[in-house]
Amino acid sequence: MRQTANALDDLPWETWDDPQLAKRSAVRWKLMFSGDRTDTADMSAGIAEFAPGGILPLHHHAPSEIYHVLEGEGRTEIEGVAHALRAGVSLFIPAGARHRTTNTGTSVLRLIFVFPTDTFGEIVYHFDE
Amino acid sequence: MRQTANALDDLPWETWDDPQLAKRSAVRWKLMFSGDRTDTADMSAGIAEFAPGGILPLHHHAPSEIYHVLEGEGRTEIEGVAHALRAGVSLFIPAGARHRTTNTGTSVLRLIFVFPTDTFGEIVYHFDE
Image 1 (tube, rainbow over the protein chains, first blue to last red):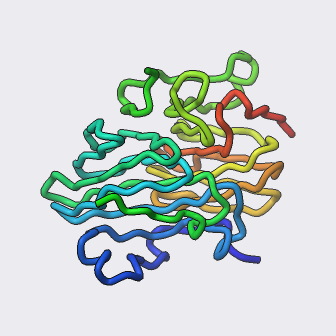
Image 2 (cartoon, chains in turn red, green):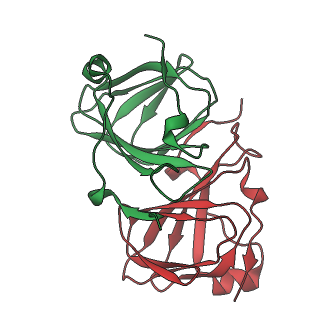
């Protein structure tokens, strides 16, 4: 049976396939749950890590998304409204809302993201900048 | 507009309305997102905290659920299969699966839970013990 439990230490870091995008989006992630690789459904989830100064440029996707910050400091703008990120902060990003995340601190920014989709592959990233 | 962003420190602890259940289930939680109190949809989420020795007895609910452990040590049994909990461990609990969580450590066990429902109130807890 495919996994329905995992530990972050055992998961590989991933980034964008597109080298141009990888260059301007200093974020990497680990996927905890995605129905194409884990025996899961209904939700896909991972952890994202931003280096200091790293930016995930303005983008949107059809499904909504939850962020929960584990460590570090940053800022997420959702449709132009800025939210400060620090450990314990949660954000809900409405379906289709344009959002941008920046690590404004001097250490790594780590957050959990969850989508209401069976797989992460269903999330089509449309970049707006 | 109702909140779509919040910080754990600002949220109240909650527990079961049923005093009998509150007595035998040594868990408390904070709700980060639930569409009846936040301007959110698609997913509801919170953080649960178990005192040392605390147990959320065997139960099930129609929707699936994700756990992501933030701190502490424990064990979750899902349909009889035991999973060790420590920081960084994620579990997917399939729809309807019976599960029980115990804090087996000497400090607080904290985990994030997410449901693929608009509200937490949609989660009807059926206890199996």
